[in-house]
Length: 94
Image (cartoon, rainbow, N blue to C red; front, side, top):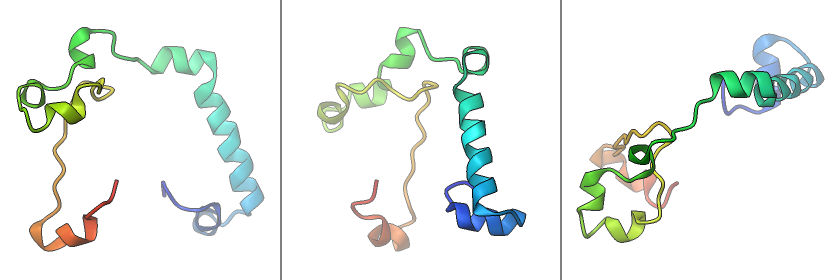
């Protein structure tokens, strides 16, 4: 249900938009609170997590675009390429 408007979530769970909005804001407050955030959210502190992958660092075509990047939050890199038949639909998309 992620990424849907409140109206769609309300229809799915058979609740009013006000109820969905109220509980959404309550959950955001819980996730941002100090006990939850400090216990379950772990940020990378090693230098390997803040450096781009070696294949990017050593590639002269990619390095100028990624030289100031800090890497993924968990230090992973997931290549994402749409199928050739769908490439036109994803052109200039984030």
